[in-house]
Image (cartoon, rainbow, N blue to C red):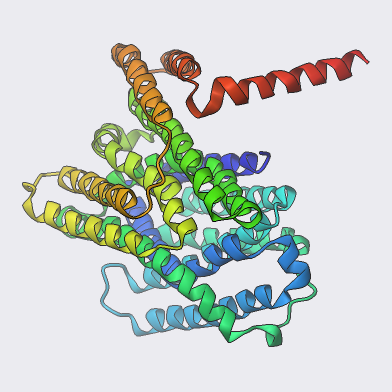
Length: 481
């Protein structure tokens, strides 16, 4: 359970860093910054992400002690890919290719993809061993350095290039802090096995391909938007979308780090049937958490924008955030809910099919939606794309792997979220500010919590609440003694 704390902390700090970078760079330079980041994310996922997925799925404390060839294979593969990435960055910079990004930003995008991949793989290794303290140290060190270097670079120089360099250096610094936990004395490159590398790549490739197809959607949209309306409009829509993704990603990642590892552990200890039952329960939990989170984000949007969005982003921020709310829900349910069902079942082709449908839906939407003077067409296209991919994935889950959440969890979450919306919608008309935001959060949480308790969503009443009471009583008894 404590693994959730660094996840939430990491997401919160990333959220703060993102807003401050946007504030200090301004819409146009932030548009260049975020377009370079979009390229970095696609490259990172395509080249390196199969290693992170493998570490989460096939690495453990027992493997570290008894099967050093697993870590050796991962390390050698990463080293080889990192060398190729560095060579590619140098070539892009020296050749000065005619790209949507300047050659220096393109080279830095490759560098960021490498540094972020190094961080994500390192955190996956410590997560797989359930080393909460090591993970927390990595998160705190990275974000402290990112705040100083990335935000500092944006503030002092107002340059996307300097901010990206700060991101790269912050990762290097945090890995030095946690080098003791990351080191494995039994690892040797000569122990690496081609058989294992092939197996790991075969496991990760379908997930990676699906992820890349999804990530290409905002990259295509931002590239087209930069061509039609300039980098400032890219910055406006990107801040709204990235903020929304960070909000639902923080919540989804915090529960996924527990639920997915629990399902993996169940499969190892109790077999595939028990793991499928666990995934079915997980789907209900994810839906019951994501639904009010996304709906609540829309409810508090006026106050959130007034309090947190940089002044030169206000107006477009709320507009684009609202237009892409369906995309945020589909993103969270796809990545932290339905995808895991297919991963545990080792049926990954549906992920690729759904991603292709999402990409096709985006291209059709961009082509058919009427042109606008701002980024509205691309915001709606993002929502259409994400919802289409999610709907396709749910349909294939029904046909191929019938792992369904309990009806009580889904119906209860829908009723609770609807009640929260009915109560909270009139409050959106109140003057935006801290008091209004606090009222909305407290009222929404109270209404949703009451209905969730009544429906016993995710075993809140029958399992979770009694467990909390027992722990509180135990602590009180210890305090008296």
